[in-house]
Length: 364
Image 1: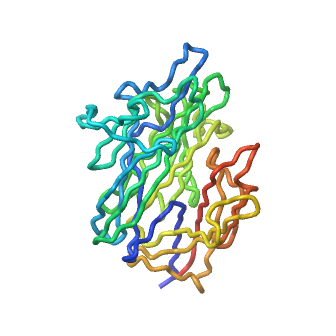
Image 2: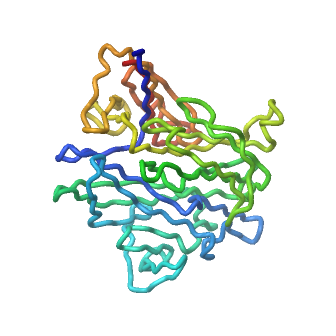
Image 3: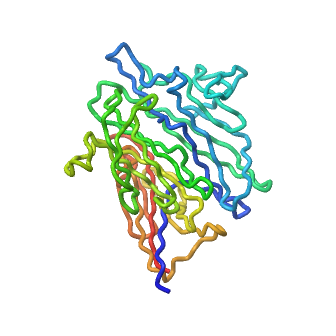
């Protein structure tokens, strides 16, 4: 029998329970991006209008045990710009669901307490709010009476109009693929300043293995035109960072067409044999002046959640520090370790978070 080749990718934060299980937290979406534009030159108009139910984005937390055990969500909370969202008794009906409206933050949010699903039901962009906002979800995941704190941060992109720059978003209906749910749809939107672009194409790149199929053209969706592409388990390996390149003309017709923007989304194949996970090995876990953070990648065998040794298997590593504003690499490493410093986080007088991605291929 000939040599068998394997590969895996990783970048998502994965929590390990004391039971030896691995819990994955991801967000399902209704296909509407967390993006809103404000145009001060057009009577302060906001687009899309989140006061309209058809335009409102939802995010639903989904947790999965790598061992297939039941995960119970307990003590779920949402925060808006680090302020706890309080829920009142007023209800809101949309999509045949009953939500409870927030009693603070001007009633801009609604949720379903049994599932943790949150819905934005009022506009957030305004003359006094033209910077990005943040939603943070926290809960306790309970498996076999053992719990662990879980969290995920979502950025609400807010763009002020009058800009001549293109801005793209990419969301997945589900970030988690399984044996029972082997496919998902990724959806790309393109904006010019605060205005939406209707005539565009996307090509989707798996950062490890190359482009997935041909370019697809945007079609009419609510609230904006979207270019959609189905992604299956065959398109990713363990964990994959997919990047969509946005074009104003079909790159399949014009080979010289150049992308005007790009955006990325992470997907996980929970049914895959291997997964790459990352851990911080330095004493400090956050970057500060003179205190870099060291990140190490390693392979986990998903069948028993054990760390899988690549000794003698000729692994080829690729670690990157990614600028999450435009998904370009700020640094790279061909080993299983990379260091993040203020050189990567501090740019143009601002401080930014970064993402570390890891790919590895090896031969058995």
